[in-house]
Each structure stands twice: as C-alpha cells, then as structure tokens.
Image (cartoon, rainbow, N blue to C red; front, side, top):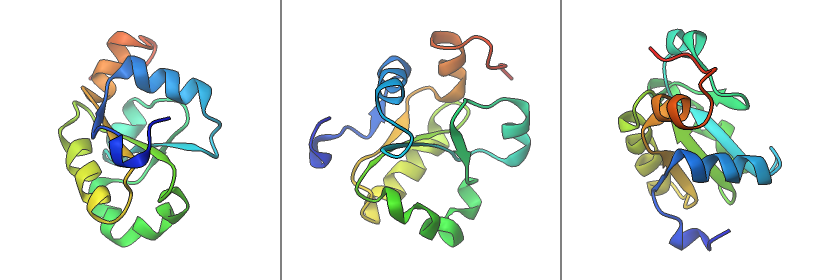
Length: 116
C-alpha cells in the first residue's frame, strides 16, 4: 500500500476490488454514505452504512480506521468524494472515494449489485 500521504482521493472500482480482496476486513473499511433506502435497494458486500448526513455525529465510530484504508462509496461518486474530503480534513489520510460509486461497481465488478 502507498504511504497515507500519497493515497489519491479517488480509487477506481477495479483497484478498489483488488484492495478489498487482498486486505482483511480489519485493515480496510468499505463505507457506504448513501441513505438507508438506497442501501436497502443495493449494497456491496462488506459495506458499512453511515449516511452522509449522520457522519458528523457518528464519526467517532470510525476512529479505529484513522490509520487504515477507508474506501467511501455512494451512488455515483459525488457524495463519497465530499465525505472523503471531509474525513481527510479530520485526519483520515487514507480515505478514498470510489470513483463512479456503486453504479460503476455494478457495471465493472459485480453486475449482481442492482442498478437504480
């Protein structure tokens, strides 16, 4: 893995899938920042839901990930990039946004994940 300071703010689905396949769940968190309704519609295995609007109150739940890889995703990658930047400003230097979101994941990695 790259040193935290060199981790790009975005990661493409293929690279993210490789990271998730190689890293044990204790070393890499896949964070879903969509709404509970979106999560109920489609989800990526291993993703933990903390909706973007709840993150300020729940950021403490992520303290164990401050020094570890954290991949954030939403529907198309816009919200997750905002969340990634917000997390980086708070010391989560290895946070990355999944470029293209769950939509890109579904088309490039796992077409069993519903598109909506």
